[in-house]
Length: 282
DNA sequence: AACCGGGACAACCGCCACGTC
DNA sequence: GGACGTGGCGGTTGTCCCGGT
Image 1 (cartoon, rainbow, N blue to C red):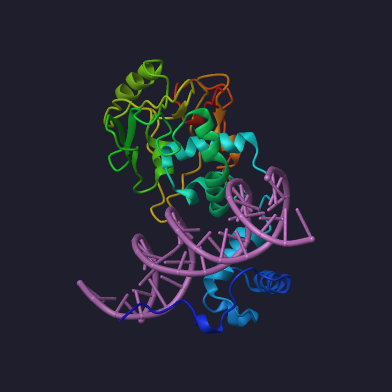
Image 2: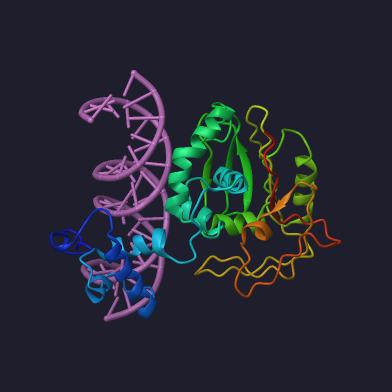
């Protein structure tokens, strides 16, 4: 007994969508909203698979999509996130408003890979071929190095972004630089497992990615187990360690809806790092 | 003008997670 | 607890476009 197909393939169109099909889909979703993808094609008068309708809407027709070229900032953010998250395109996409996972995935495969190769960076490892690799184990909320031949293994349960933004002081840093400070800070201030090391240093490229550790004066926020969404950040005190650091939530909209504005740039007393990255030095 | 190859991107496919019954 | 339906994700393929020959 095989699984039931998502639609009757013999009665569905395939291939590129026509303008008329697009209009039908847009019109239907405007009237009835998203969801019920399986029954949507019939209801909307489309000879398409429900999955196909969903993809078309999400990747192309959604009104909040940002069309056009990726900016340099977006490029670097994608690279930074990919170095930590791996091919978690949907998670990466959720940090780039108006971009879809498919778009980012395609962009990665066609542009960024080549860009990294030109920089002498292995897009898989974000380092030279035999570079020190990184292992992120979020279940225990700790990070440790793994000096193996294999590419970085990134285990991302339950949600890598929460792990990144809430738990670990992840430093993809120049070897032996101020990561030690962060580390000592981290291990002394948190009740979590000590971060041993996290170094990815491609040839001359500063891949510095910093994510804050919980401080003793900051309670670990409750994580929505269903959505894995980060909680509101209003009560988090944070500051940027370096003037050139870029706060991810400010610049790329990880705060949204009813979440309050990030206060990373305001004067705060705490030494807590939170979620920012240092753009690459080219 | 015709052909070819590579790049870019939309779309598809198979699998998996989760919720419901 | 297992079967089933559904939505979502990541990898792959198909197709179009454009520049070079």
